[in-house]
Length: 307
Image (tube, rainbow, N blue to C red; front, side, top):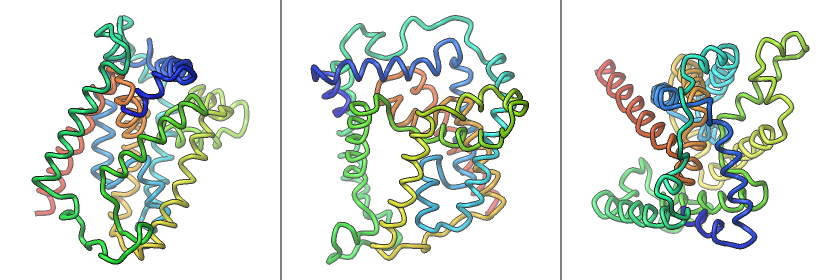
């Protein structure tokens, strides 16, 4: 939010920022309401808990050699394909009855974006600081970082540093492409390649719209590049292939459920968690709690089943 606030205040950045938000809203206005956001987020969380991944992290798992990550990818593509087939039905059943008067928190409050965003960013930073005092992030590592390792050789970086780096990427994307971070759209774009004839394309106008979309394929390039980033990071730190994965069945089914839910909500942990909440999009604040609820409940059920 800090990076977005800076961009929104810059004379050359504000037009890009406003254009990005209008483009972001077009995916939802008149198409997605609270029902689709909440249900899609819940389904997405269920899938993530089953396959131990999310649409963005999956690409990194492919690069780091996580077992059965390829099966999760196959499931994710299947979920995108399935959603493409039933999308008209999903939209018809969940389409909002009226257009909301405000799309974002700052619009609702009637303030400039940065006036609403910066206090929220400060509160979140305070929460991170407090959590670090009570539960240092290093205590979660199964294998501690070496005291003599260089930055590239560390098995893990501080989460707050990684978060700030991810946030800075948002500002760069807004200024250069007028877009934000996302990942679940990439699966719809890749799934659209099965529509090899015009007759097949008529089966799913939804997937067809992504087949020739430069923005969708730019996201594919962005996400696939993270496979290389994951590989390099794991190679330098000696963690390549050392992270345990889930079973093949859980990987495939979880991947399919995860992306089906993400497409229902029109966004995932990246699109809603990083970008939607980052621009204070109100529906993203519906998706996120639903996502965590689905994940927590599913994890509890799986843990109880395993004894």
